[in-house]
Image (cartoon, rainbow, N blue to C red):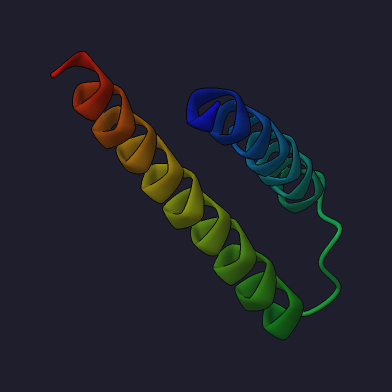
Length: 65
């Protein structure tokens, strides 16, 4: 159950991260401030994804024991 929940969150985070990265790469930012904000959003999503991955691994290890 936890694994399915984590997979769903990871997929959503990855989709959002990829969309924001595409926006950044395509020059969607009109100012340096927008660029910095978008970089922060991408960084936050990447950190959140890492947390979900780590929690999923912990949950899977607990189930194995």
